Structures are given as C-alpha cells and as structure tokens.
Image (cartoon, rainbow, N blue to C red; front, side, top):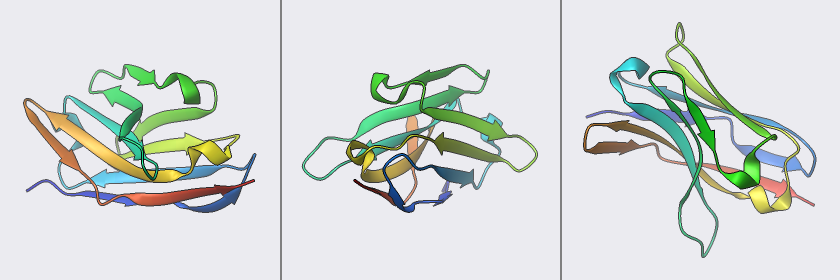
Length: 115
C-alpha cells in the first residue's frame, strides 16, 4: 500500500509563508502525477497544484503567483511553497499521488492563516 507522509503545516499570519512536504513510500516517478488538494470546513476538496511525472505543473486560479509546486528527485519529495498566505487559504491540505486509475492520499496537514 502506497503511503504519503506529509509535513509542514501550521499556523501563520496573513502574508506569511509555509512549505509543505510530501514523501511517498515509492519513487515519485512511479506516479503519473503528484499534487496537493485542500479542504476547508464545509467545502469540497479542491485541487491546489499538481505536477506530472514529466514536470508539467498546473495551479488553481486562486493560488497562481503565490504557490509553487516542485519536487526534489534525490529526496523523493514533492513540495508546496506557499507565499503571501491569506485567511482563505486556511484548510487541511492533502498530498495526492495518481497512478493509472488509482489515487493515493496522505493523512492531511492543517494550515491556518490568521488575519
């Protein structure tokens, strides 16, 4: 069973930065894509950012220009650098990995932005 270990969430003031990390139990190149989703209270889970095995990235409109997804092949880790955080970014952030018809999820990490 694939495991995704997340870290890096926390409490930050508006305008601040956080970096989330996701380390899968298998090589990141075994997945078609990896990404980050988030879910705020009472809201549906939404895509934040994604990177394909070929390095193509895409972002939700709400985070473009503020968030950056990247990967470190040597550390087998995917990152989400979040800058200029806003209160509306408050949510549980989930790492996701896709392979074929399968999707794997991390346990989630809380990000809270205080205004």
